[in-house]
Image (tube, rainbow, N blue to C red; front, side):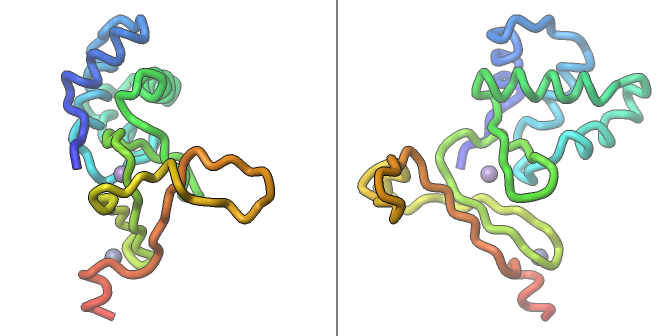
Length: 143
Ligand code: ZN
Ligand code: MN
């Protein structure tokens, strides 16, 4: 599992043509290396102490530029969109008790884009993403 670093995200912001303001840099730093799949709201909450004037629009615009330039990817698991600095193909395991979202590596050699059929006639598969739902190891032990 490789999470994009601050340098990767900063490069993405530059490719998107955005000026590297202190607020955008802080958003990039906050998301880089973060494997918890935060929402825009969560990132905003983490940063308002340092940047009381930071708007949600700034967070959304920055995340949108990062998504366009493959600095991160959007993750839709139901509820608010989450942001993932791991842009390599992988699946997710969601704990229904504590809400933790963990990366699940694809087995070696597994190609998430090929060789799989969709039962819908004529549907061309480009990507398959799995979501495992249940209890994480810690919650399963406590249950
Ligand atoms: Zn859990
Ligand atoms: Mn992930």
